[in-house]
Image 1 (spheres, rainbow, N blue to C red):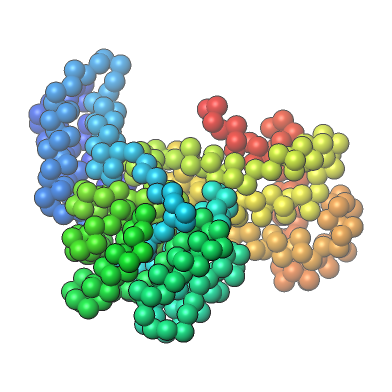
Image 2: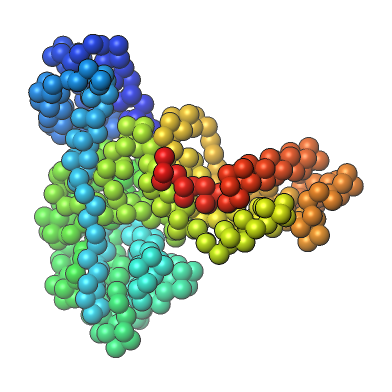
Length: 440
């Protein structure tokens, strides 16, 4: 995400490289490029100009320390202003109530139903809440079925009715949730246009009837400035509490993420970063600013690692590593844990400096498929005893996995190198190594 913007901002800061001090001239040259970068990222001219004016005011008002290069100071100022533009601090979602009711609104195709399921999964797995999903989209064909499939996938109940009145459905669902001791009710509504008066009246009626603790507006970030304009139109009518940006992983520009909060004066609360049910992140303005400026997001990476970190499993692996018993079953388990953390390329982009290196490299989520196929073609004996895999076994494994003997040999070599590396780390697993990044 934000690849184009990050690259152009980096080029703009190079103007100050080698400069002994900040001057009005080199600041003006740098900010001219920054403004261009923001406009290219689908930020409106007015907001881009206002942003650069603030940066200029702060840059020229700074007493530059001899230990700080002008370029570094400019990056610091831009970083602070980006955080401010996107909301400064994390805004928690309000889930207080008996039950707490969350109303989901947005355009058709913005990803409301998928977000509703992701949000339910987030509340269930990370907050320990009992959640009820409500299928109140009675217009889109298969919308109810889609929510039911997703609900079954994450183990969350879905409330449905045969009637075609979404206001009554939402009202009945909240009453049902109270009877069943549900903590949070998530009402998924139909997509609608701000210019469709009848549909806007309908969602206003739903909100008035169920009186939600939280109303979230879901918007496709890839629609850029249109997303910002749509959010303003919906907010004028609904006065929602927060914004959810979906498909952020597919947006290389980032204009919506940068400016939507500034326009509607409502916080971005969540961002969708993939298709998996776990691919939902709380929005952190400071971390996003760091990623935009190519400084990575090591804190989020560590948090993702810790979510998958199993202390009991780590102790078991530590013992196996010390006795040189780490095998392909353990290796496969580690791969599965890493995959649960999210999109591989996105994870690598959280490491400072790596995002830039990975810009033109395609890292698919299927990157581990070949490895998993090879391990899957091994017998239980071979998985537990990698050193016993001789030439004839390698040939059979290659044939069974649809790969070549060279690929099998390469994996065996990589496995041995990984085993040695993990032992050197201190007998911990990869998750433990990532956990220790906090000390860097």
